[in-house]
Length: 135
View 1 (cartoon, rainbow, N blue to C red):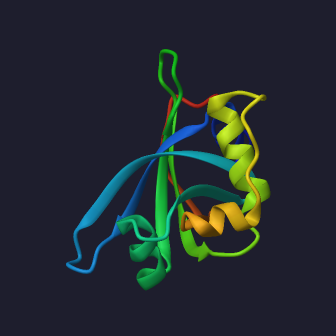
View 2 (cartoon, rainbow, N blue to C red):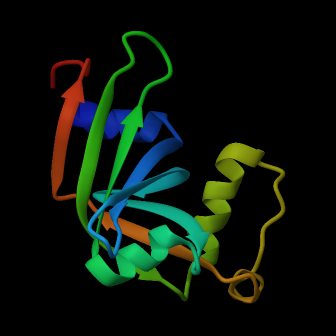
View 3 (spheres, rainbow, N blue to C red):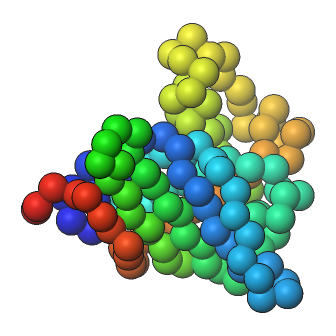
C-alpha cells in the first residue's frame, strides 16, 4: 500500500464492502471502518450476510472514496476473517468515529450479547485507485 492509498484510508471512515455470496454473486454494504497498518476492520452482526460470506469465502474488499473533488478513491482487498472475541476496543473506536468522542463504550460481554463481531481484511491488493496524489 502506498502512502497516498494509506492516507485515503485514514482520512475517511466510510466505505463500501463487497463480499461473494453462496450463489457466486457479489453483495455490497456501506460500513464504518477503522484501520491498523495493513488491516481494515468493520463491525457488523454475526448473522448478517457480509459476516456469513466472509466466514465461508475468507475474502472481502472495501472501496473508499474521499468526500471532496476530485473524489480520490481506491479499492482494497484481501483475505478476510470474522473475529468473535476481543472486539470491544476496535468496535468502540469505530463507533466513536461517527458518534463522537462521548459515545458510550460497550464491553466484550455487551457486544457478545448482541452478536456484534468484527471483520478484518488484510490488504494484499489495491486496485482502481484514482485521483490520488503521487507517492
